[in-house]
Image (tube, rainbow, N blue to C red; front, top):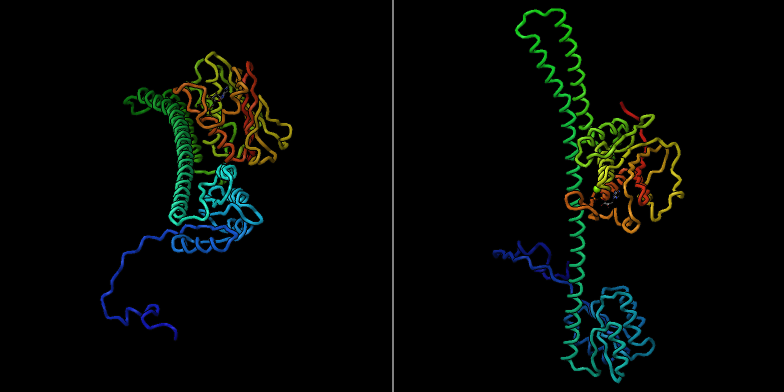
Length: 436
Ligand SMILES: Nc1ncnc2c1ncn2[C@@H]1O[C@H](COP(=O)(O)OP(=O)(O)O)[C@@H](O)[C@H]1O
Ligand SMILES: [Mg+2]
């Protein structure tokens, strides 16, 4: 402590000084000084440049090219002033290598008796300016200030381009989320539809019974049987409603990470209800073939409905003429032989990296005998917003969503198509025990 004058000792000023404290405004964060690298093998110009710029910039100096490159690798350099004629590595070479280390460094070349060819070469290598040696202070200041400004502008443009890119990605993400929410809306609308059926039956039967019973205070055997019979139907329908709502509430709550699973055949039956009231069905033929032996899959029910619904609607929409769409599946007791799948003009396998390829697996395929997908558009169909449909039918998000959901659930997606014959989309998912 001995070396400190008392007033400068930390935390003591308030007790020693009996004056009101002045609370100063927090000063805005100071910008870090920009960094200037001076490269010259002669001591004289190095020194004069140092004197000229030491207050304004954070200075680094190098007496040869190798040191300059090393400094550029260790520090962020904004601008370099580089002599063109040096022993060892020439200024032109230093310029080229500095740009290689960081293309954003702006370089001002110092030239003496160079030919215009050399100067042209320097400019071609993206030197931003050149200045004659011996230099006058005014031109040197102006050249370095200009280079610094250019550096700042370039990095602002670069930052803005990055921000723009980021915003576009966020927007895309948001659009996809919105579409997924809309799909879920459709699914939940179908629950209401599913529950509506039994409710209609229940209310009809209650009405019938009320009419039959009327104001009677006692029931004849025949009437009693009638009522009992209707009550049995009502009970069945009520159980149905409860089951439907339980199943979907289960979908709502469970995330894949919590070990979500769903029974395949029940889900195919739910999907069937949903599709039979879907506007895109039109007069196409549609069949669902349940698994010969039912099993579960490790996925949230609404995710799987969303996957199959998107693929099925695409299959309906692929042609304006009446055609056939089928969904079928099977349990696979071996992992997939991935080497057998080769991407080509008619096939694609997606999400191989994330795929949990352990048996047992469940295969679910949606096939149509529509026009198929031409090889020139096949590479684009999974891109968000790619659509060949008009705005009423297509958003171009369906397959992107399918691909995401399959990926999130550790599955794989395969596509086989042939122009004039049709298309098959196949989803492979890890199987799970069936919970009843
Ligand atoms: N089963 C299919 N048959 C033919 N083309 C298809 C089929 N499924 C998808 N496509 C093509 O892939 C494109 C992208 O599909 P998708 O991402 O679901 O968006 P959208 O259905 O809104 O166009 C479709 O516009 C269509 O050209
Ligand atoms: Mg679609």
